Length: 44
Image (cartoon, rainbow, N blue to C red):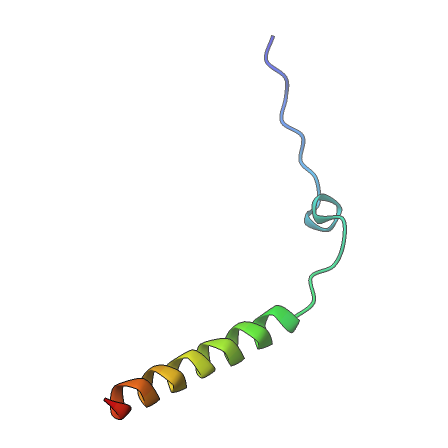
């Protein structure tokens, strides 16, 4: 027999909350990576 799908709420499936710190870290590191690449290109 085929079992029915179980639908679980997002918060329960993750077992926690998702803070927005990850967005800041990604944004800052992307900005720094772009700055470093510009410095490397202009330096050579």
